[in-house]
Length: 147
Image (cartoon, rainbow, N blue to C red):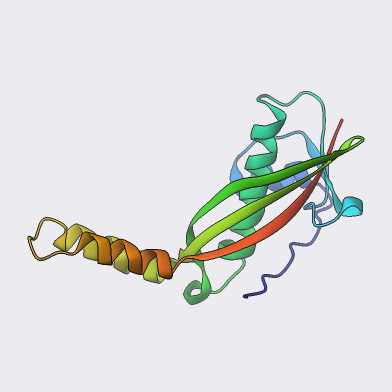
């Protein structure tokens, strides 16, 4: 399994998110790697808590798997799927499955599909099986504190 570097806590998390992702979220704390490093979701956000949590988890995944890596090591087509949720007072421990594929490899698959998908010799099943085999899947835990 590939180990991705944990993202360091920002002094002003909501400002960091505004600058990097152009998103206005009322949050503080850290990136949710443990209960003491939970992301604090403040009152006054638009949208449901679940939507905000999913958005934050997606941002963290993009930071870990794409934005902080060298170009040839970056992942794209990053998707999250919630697997479980445990509430512990004000805290929520959410487990996500993150799937992604190396960006350069994904681009080759997209180009191949665009170029050959209309051809009668194109094996669609084989193409998507290769994409599936190239996809990295990992489970991550994200801690939130909801105020």
